[in-house]
Length: 178
Image (cartoon, rainbow, N blue to C red; front, side):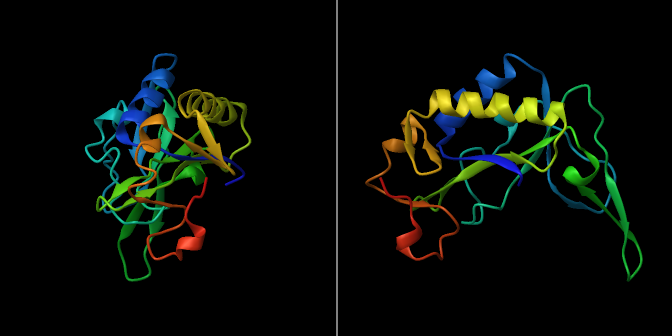
């Protein structure tokens, strides 16, 4: 990612950040993935994501969403497979005005996985979207350690669970320290 921000947040923290961003602009979110069909589900708010605040893999680069302004088209990459067939990819390669959000979250009630928002694009639109998220993350996360912003609700968990910067298999020396 050329430009990004890292954070530790719970669902409570994330909802506030998302609401702040979405009160100024209408967005759409599409799970980044490869699909067997070019019919891709779009959600109108990240609050609609049923696992918001939960990390499903224990890794900071797992669940992620392409974020676009509502009026911007979603461009899907079609890739022919060597064994036949086609896969459809949702990513930034064909969506230069987008950003990506990895929401992070609690994993197995023992770990808080960091989230981050970033973009590989240099368009004014993608930079503007990223800056909106950055401003609101900084506004709602009153604590900072190194490059990580920490949500107020997340801080309540600091002495109870590990704050994971990479994945749950990392040595504790790489956990977030205050």
